[in-house]
Image (cartoon, rainbow over all chains, first blue to last red; front, side, top):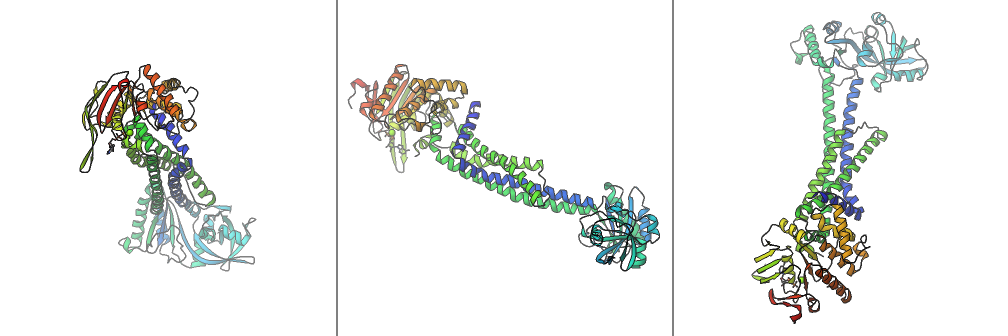
Length: 408
Length: 229
Ligand SMILES: Nc1ncnc2c1ncn2[C@@H]1O[C@H](COP(=O)(O)OP(=O)(O)O)[C@@H](O)[C@H]1O
Ligand SMILES: [Mg+2]
């Protein structure tokens, strides 16, 4: 193809596209929808991945949870500790703390139980959580009013309580400062020390937090913990910290190995891996379906280009008679196919951005267009133009000029 | 300019062979104006197609401007068509969406002539065929005679050694056909080599030389003054 013919091809292709505007639009529509779908679906996938990470971070960073009992499938980070038979002792907690600051930054025990909270005439069911003073830092949930109970309160079995945000809503109407007020938990009076920030999780929001010593004395009567919350020193040593904790508690419990253990450690990393794996599969699935629609769009282009080649048989014959080589004819029809698919791709990218925006704006879904998906789907639409335009162009270039000139 | 020796074009149709051209021999000099005449089915278009390098002979030799063309690749034949041949068709064969200027530019595009030169030359050719001011008209806005003039301008645009016209007045009324013949004469006076195919003896006689063919063979090859159909 000669240099001048390049712009000629573009000009002629645009003219031919404009001459059949509706048909061209419908042809490109397949690629538009396909490209848009790929971008929107990958955006949903990326959004899902992001929100998984974000919600895990909101649970607290570098989190290790030492549970009583045998591991259960999934090992969800926030399993209710209400129905667990506690097997973890103060000795275990001490041993975990003593692993040293290079492994364990913070640790807090936790046990819980169902109960009733009452203020004035209002009653509500709550989860009563007994824990230590480090709980807010480890679990990344902080008081918005008042403060968490102090070390002295925790040690002296003081009847102080920090209430979850929903409890605050229901007992106090969500207004005013309840700090210093007395509420009743299972009939016993507690002084409200603080109100937790809303977490969006019903477990945390409908819990009330009391010192573990108070819990053991007045609620459970059991000296053991259902759970030990641990914040590892850094993300990099989480598996190492997990191993050290397991080894230490096995030793204290005089157990030979983890198969026989009456406790297990849930690692935030494992959960992240699992959830990201799920999000990844989800992305792949959606992207795959969208890619198929892009492929179908490409077949649409091929279909219309074949029709166009047949319709323009005479024109092809004329061009050949005037000196067009097979390469010139190929270039002309390929240019047209590529313009259609690229235009479709560009509009599709805009559609994808729009759809992604609509997902998060109206659908409440996390959605984020990634540059990779834009590059990927655009490149794909160009390739589709090349591939599906190639065959019709080849057909055109192989026409016998005499037959083509005779075509009615 | 053109040397044709024992040229044959046979079509195999199952068990039989159609000899559309059967061992034809003639020569044409630069600057000649030759008409090829014969009844329908006598092989005129077949001969045109071979002379125009749209088709290859099945036998014999065809030398165009010193070059043997009988067994060339399709790309090489396309190049020769672009550089040495100008076609004029009975049904004009203009591209309907392109205006006169763009239609005339076409053969120059495939020769790689730059756009500015192309446009200038296309304008010159349109002026030469008497279509000044019609550059922006698309074929549907032109009369049959004007369309054929555009086609002739297009045939001239690539600066060909030879112009091949297959029944160029066949789709025109007698008066317009006469005007087109006038145009051919004036082009020939300016030095263009012309081969005109027709079944009409009156048109054929207006060339300087007549080659009469029948059943793929040459019946007569004489100056038009001495020709009796
Ligand atoms: N593609 C073809 N296949 C078979 N026979 C053909 C073909 N083209 C032309 N012919 C035959 O060759 C002969 C000459 O045809 P043509 O050159 O078109 O005649 P003319 O132009 O003088 O009317 C006719 O008998 C025609 O049927
Ligand atoms: Mg004919």
